[in-house]
Image 1 (cartoon, one colour):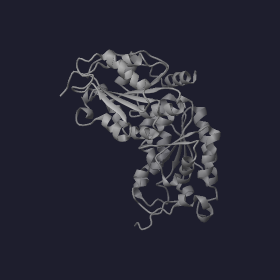
Image 2: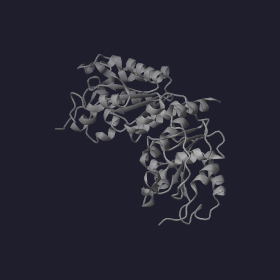
Image 3: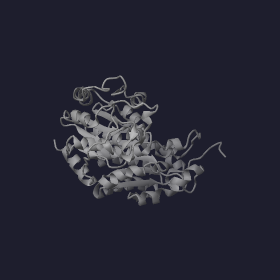
Image 4: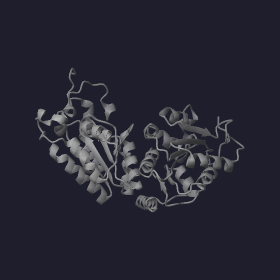
Length: 202
Length: 203
């Protein structure tokens, strides 16, 4: 969640380079603008509502959602609100997407009782922190725990290996959520996003 | 410090009698029991857990079903746990969403431990600060609805506000810390969600 990274700046990070993926070229980069591809998948999935506690790694996706009059971007104060909101939209007839940072997964734990017990489809897009190239140790505890945490709480986890696989994983996760009546999460790795750099930091 | 407060069951029953086809989202604990006691309906979605989630679930329903009035009925502690929801709701400004907070100033379900609204915390003021302009309290000391108030008349007035006024609207009702007869809705989450969704989609 944004609040987990207060004022550590500037951020010449991956999200600023989404428009020119080729310039990054490191690790997972394969030239795909995954943020845009996920955004483009929304109409086909019938998703008109995206709830978020923003994260730099989701920047491109969120920016496109915000600019689209057909998408309602719902800014949250804490990620658990997004789970409850998405359950509400589904009860009203529509799947929503919840776009959060991995640290925010730590905030949704008890709220997952709602989609679990009620078997409500719930779709999460999670930008990872705390992985291999993390430079902020405060991101590590929950970031590392995310896959186990989600698995323990009955959330199906999809982990695309390259930028070009994110949108298809997202579509697959949406199908799983709908068909199985349970939450499903796509974890976008730091390898795909690019590790956040802290210029001027330690 | 405690005053004679509103009778929660009579108040909720009086309000829900005027719901029309509104969807009702009930927060966990006494608020859910109150809504159930007022008359079960497929258009009621009851929480049995996931504390703090009622307001946001109500927002989700309200956003996709703009044709439908949505009323969230919940307790003071449940609302405070989801306090940030008030900011999220204010930003979306759903005209069809209303919230009724039954404030007994205690954690009634867990042994009546003192709650924070009995100290210095004012949920209606928080809601206004969050950006929900129509947010007010009834049943507080010396105010409308305090001891001696005709609950039925108050329920009629509140129902008009909660079901007809342009949302988002939030009403805090100071209610007595009372013991009410058991009135439990189904605990089966799949049943609750299936019938609620079907009832919403039904027309």
